[in-house]
Image (cartoon, rainbow, N blue to C red; front, side, top):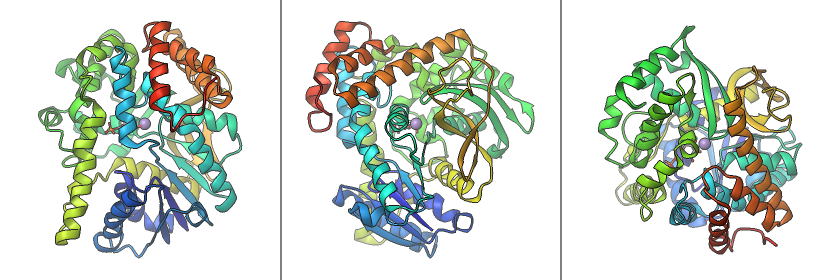
Amino acid sequence: MIITIVGGGSTFTAGIVKSIALRKAELEVDEIRLFDIDKERQDKVAVLVKWVLEEDLKSGIRLTVTYDPEAAYRDADFVFAQMRVGKYAMREKDEKISLAHGCVGQETCGCGGLAYGMRTIFPMIQVIDDAKKYAKPTHWILNYSNPAAIVSEACRKLRPDARIINICDMPIAIIDVVAAALEIKDKKEIVYDYYGLNHFGWFTSIEYRGEDIMGKLRDYIMEHQILLPDAYVKSVGKIAQNSGTEGNRHAKGSWYYVWKGVYEIMQNFPDTLPNTYLNYYLQQKEFVEHSDPDHTRANEVMETREKNLFEGIDHYLATGEIDESVFYAGSHGDWIADLAIALKNDTKARFLVITENRGAIPNMPYDAMVEVPAYIGKNGPEVIAQNPIPLFQQGLMMQQLTCEKLLVEGCVEGSYRKVLEAFTLNKTVPSMKVAKEVLDDMIEANKEYWPELK
Ligand code: G6P
Ligand code: MN
């Protein structure tokens, strides 16, 4: 049993490997392969991965580090993809170019997300094609690579038969925070209903051991005027990453605002718990106002998570001492490893996945890539049918979905007009003129990565 991690040089790799190794019995995994196109970066991360597998957990799992697609995918059972095309340097540009034009500057939302999507579509298709060529015919690709909404639409359109499931850890990270806020220890007993697009959705119910806790949660948020436990709020300013309580990763630096924004959204729309990412679409003006156009989330990550990781590895190489807080292990890796268990062992466990709607949300298009709960067995997700969604959410989702579909069509056809339509339609963009200005700057910045637009 072989698991290949694509984007082996990621700051998340060691954490994912730890989650896999801790589930060795259920996964029956013999070998983990790291695959990246950045050799220097992956070789560094591999030092830590080797420590996790051999020193920390004494797992007996074989580690292979490769830069060659055939060696990476050959006979693999699972491909865990978590690439970041253009790395943090391009994330910084996505965020800063958007902000320079007065638009939300965010990794996966608004213009930044559209630009990132244009970079990621074809590399993702390459992963699918290589896995099909070399991996076991029964392989599954579990994909974290962002922007997952756009990536999943591109996969549906270009490779409808691909054995890929696109996923996101944000809803589960939100549930972690909910559990911490309400002092729930066994968060595995929390069951929730949810619908939306990726980074664009709502929790409609949250139950703990069969009891509805949405009311209690709403009271907590209204009282504290934020969805964060007090302990997390105290450490918000300290953007040193990775240490401390699980869930904290999303409560550092500028992440603070989206947890505050959950309160602001619920003041007006109290019935559902919004995904934190909805803030970028519902409070776009306010987000631009409190953003620093010269120092964005990409800078925070480079100065903390990325720096700590590579310094920690250098320190280990020099001294033999390891500080485990330099890498994040927890829900992010657990979520993808648990999903693999459900597929492999045909458990029919319930997971939130990004999947073709096929009627699950009756008043959204059949072919929309939606994020909804599904039972996961060896043949993939069995989507759970839901009630029709309210008009407000339907309207928001249709605008966002259409924007994403236009972007994918524009990218595939090399159509400047369609991509401009996508930028113009995005809810974070105030006018057609601004859309065009941002797009033209993004084209310039992404010359190395985007297909040519005519
Ligand atoms: C959440 C989202 C991911 C996103 C990440 C960014 O986990 O689900 O899709 O990439 O946040 O976190 P960062 O710490 O890099 O800002
Ligand atoms: Mn995500």
